[in-house]
Image 1 (cartoon, one colour):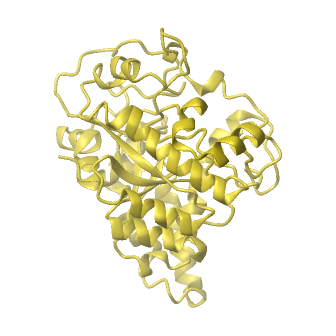
Image 2 (cartoon, rainbow, N blue to C red; image 1 turned 60 degrees about the vertical axis):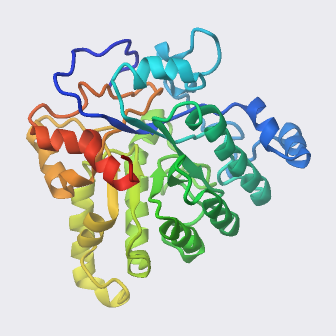
Length: 366
């Protein structure tokens, strides 16, 4: 991982046509003006964002660096990291000769805001911004459909509004929702995604109102970073045991920015419990590990770094090299350099699949 990266550490010998599956564009408050009605623009200016927890602006620990950004990601023309398309081209798309990048906007999108109607208006505006400022100007970029997931009806309408658009590659949710992801209140969102032919990307983060651990708020940012993995474990377990994949057998889910080394052990644990307690969940017809391998994809970043590199490869083998997607997390401080991110012992076929082939197949990219 690199806090500051100005150029690749070494030249790539082979062009992989990289697809970066986790780029964070910075949406600016002032750009919402043209996409919000007078009512909701006034609401935003007067009341601001109201997430579902007691810290009105952020979690109670700093993110290592301002905006959780690389030190060199602040555009020379001014502005916030991730807000300048030209600088993003220079630092990422052109520098690494990428074929595509998937935009995953985190703030200020108001996903999960306490006012569901305001959240819906902000989601629509965020999606319009992605097109106007990014995908319409750079064909290598694909947007994610931001949905107000605590307002399922509005989420369905937003997905249908974007269905069939070449600008959008997936439906975008966060991992910390007010209820577990498999609960039926969210099923209309998954159904709409399947009908639109879009995967559902679930990115770590969110403002659900609940502490990050089952025993309260952590003391340190390092604990929050660790929770990214445990939070996604809850997502996987809930979706499987609520019977989601028996209902929507074509549903595809991408777990973003939580690593993947934990997934094999989770599969083993879920299988063990299912064998002993399957009568409690008769709607779960098969071992949980089968649902994992059929319905889930994972992004590489932040990839675990084991003392024995072979252990990372073991995890990759269990998951399947066809289920792993490269992600850089640009412009954040824990950015993964595409040149250095993958284990050197991967075969050319495996490397090509992770860098580009898997994502192009999943997202329907040429």
